[in-house]
Each structure stands twice: as structure tokens, then as C-alpha cells.
Length: 209
Image (cartoon, rainbow, N blue to C red; front, top):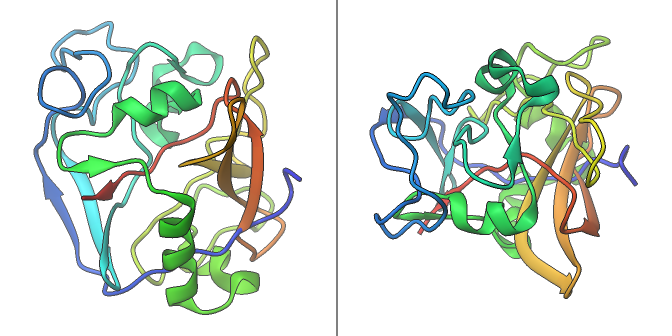
């Protein structure tokens, strides 16, 4: 299941940088974050310098979210890892953490991204960043999505597969305890679709409302 790689869809590739608040009272949900707090645990893109990319009819964040809220963590507690790969979130935190004007993509919205590219068996290569993936698994990043392998974690266990596999939440539930997600790996060109327990921790990409 964790080796599967799901397809995504992308459109035009104009990357941009913008300033925006994360969570708190700005309508984005989640917990307030002080970007000037040196103990922010790697939450450096919570309030500024988000990159975004337009892919077809959708606007996506062009980096994994790195906003330090309850229910999120860094690999080995290392802020440098969060700076590179973003934080990992349990599903409840992922549902609240996107800034105002953005939201956690639904399973269908992930499907729209993948379908735009046209073939789930090769979409991963086109969405992966040109560096950061181990074992010669880098992508071509044709659409500026720049997917990076933040790994995953089970409830109460260390984060694993950082640098080799990336997993991203969707907002679509399977049932009260599980939700859908997408994954990409260093050893495949695929974008996979999976469902897991909401207590697991995965990366977050937000899509514009």
C-alpha cells in the first residue's frame, strides 16, 4: 500500500510567492502560530513565502506545508527536516491547518490534478521535484508542483521513509477512523491512492478555494 504512487493533475506552471497567515483567527482553522518564535519547530512558511502554482483550473501550494500546530511533527524533531520536507500532520490537524483562502484537497481534487496530467502511471515523475528523492528517484517537475518525500508515521511511532516516499492527506473520509490520501515513491513514476487511519501523520498540500 505504501509503495503505491498516485496520479495527479497539473496545469500551467507559473510559480509565485505570497504572504499569508496560517490558522488562528484568520478563518483557516488550526492553532495560532507566531512566525517570529524561535521555537516554532520549523514552521517557517506559516506566514510568509508560500510558493504556489497554477495547474489547469487549480491553484496549489508548490511546497509541503510547514506550519507548527498541535498534531504535527518534524522528522526526529529536527526543524531542518521540516524546512526541507515540511511537517507531517494527523488528519484532524491537516483538516484545520490550511490558511484562509485555502483548504485540504478532497480526493476528487487530487484526482483532477492527476487526470490533468493524463496518466497515473507516469504522473509521479512529472510532479516530483528534480532533487531530494533518493536512489535516482528524482522527477522532472514539469508543472512546478515540486513534490518532496516527507515520509510518514504511525500514531506513537517514529517517522519513516523520509527522502524516499511522500504521502499526502485528502479531506475525504472513508469512515469515522480513516481517510484517503496520495503517495509517490523514489522507485516508481506512479501516483498512488490509499486510505489509512486518521491518527497517522502525512504531508499536507493545500489548494486554493
